[in-house]
Image (cartoon, rainbow, N blue to C red):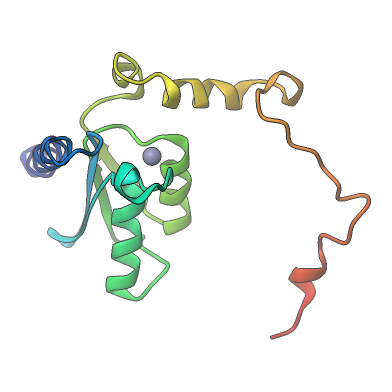
Length: 150
Ligand SMILES: [Zn+2]
């Protein structure tokens, strides 16, 4: 049964290699439902000037549009590299509960340390983080949009 997972990951690796040959970054993802591919996504951040255009994001966006749903809980996501924090968030938003990858964040750090650094950053106290985020909720009415009736 593990062979089927190897099949999809190997396909992601080949897609990622082709993506590099096309001038893009080495990342590709496939979303599978009931044993069949629902969508494919490759990182096209360089071509689209979109830093969020990761393979997982593209595959999730396409799967949602194709299946006309926000709930991909019956889908499995395959990706050649362990998802970065942004893609992991998108995976949670999509409801996907099963992810397989071909290279861990630790192993990816040999080539790009940012995903590993981001996960480490989240563990730090707010005062130690590089990113400055300020809470104005005591001075504005941030709850108002949630109370609007359709
Ligand atoms: Zn990502």
